[in-house]
Image (cartoon, rainbow over all chains, first blue to last red; front, side):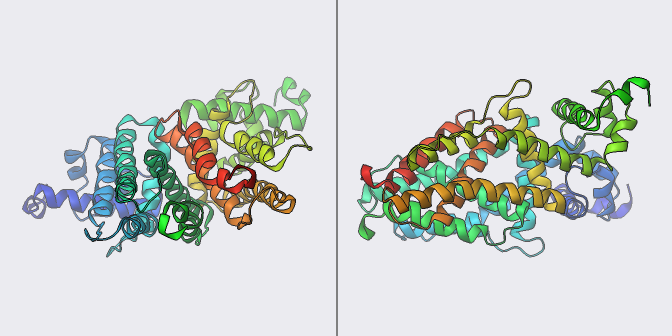
Amino acid sequence: MSESDEKVSAKDTEEVIMEATFRALSKHGYSELRMRDIGEEMELTRQVIHYHFDGKYDLMASFLEYIIDQYEGSVEVDGDADPRTELDARIDQCLFGPEFEEFSHWDRMKVYHELYTFAQNDETHREIFNDHYERIRGSIVEVVEEGMEQGTFREVDAERMGQLVTDIIHAARGRRMALGHEEAPEQARQSIDEFILDSLTLDEE
Amino acid sequence: MSESDEKVSAKDTEEVIMEATFRALSKHGYSELRMRDIGEEMELTRQVIHYHFDGKYDLMASFLEYIIDQYEGSVEVDGDADPRTELDARIDQCLFGPEFEEFSHWDRMKVYHELYTFAQNDETHREIFNDHYERIRGSIVEVVEEGMEQGTFREVDAERMGQLVTDIIHAARGRRMALGHEEAPEQARQSIDEFILDSLTLDEE
């Protein structure tokens, strides 16, 4: 290890590796990615990666959590907002994402969706995705239940509605990336309003 | 090429290669798949694959069309059925799939969804998926329009509803496979009924 490597703390090192992983993934895609591609994207020696991570899968699990943390950490909804406004904000966040400096929401979601598809072969990834799915769904269920308690939403199966909305968001993001339908998130947003939320809101009936 | 290889017609050969591809994919997954893995799953020599296909991507494009043809060829809806019954049958077909002898609907969908995720890097695959997406969506739009013409469905944006239902189906299949939610297709079916189709059908309001 060179002297410059030693100056970097463990936390910084992991971030350097994560950012290098992002650049390597953007170039090579997940299935073609090799540890040495990541090494080529950073100034530290490749041995640092092997020191911190036990192979590609281990690194990818950490990388997935890194993306999710950034994505979730940025949700901001005014606590005083009425349930419908809050629901709209949460759905928008999932569909259109927060803004980032280097890689965009879609760069991040591209990796997310690739790893999602492979989660069936990887118990650790599957667990991370399941946790994330539950948090997204839960955050929608919570607001729907709040609205029902306040009497602004009609009585529905909140769990099922949260699940449906989460599925629609996921499909629209996937369709934008896989099929190149740039307008998919906007279409999903309109469909959720027109077919699901408008009939939920009692005031608007 | 051995004598036995020559006896097989081009069409049969392609089917043999497709079935071998299925077996190889089930074992290795898409990202790890190598042409030689397919060769190991068939009795013909590996050169036959190279003779028929110009590399892995070309073979995968044909394989994708092979899966879609089998899947679509099996949709059977009674011509006299009312729009709601027809809509239900088409949605069920997409969600639960037809029955196959060797590989199940889910084995087929696993490959379909893996390739779908990679379609962003592959123009040929993207085109095949876009065509398929349009056919599925179109088949739903068609029945919704039929129901509106007959006066059994309320007036809606049929295009958008077709798209929404197609997205929900896709997400539920993906969730079953990626996250292991065995119940996802059944949940999607119930959500489509409860939140979308029941309010579409005027008789039931």
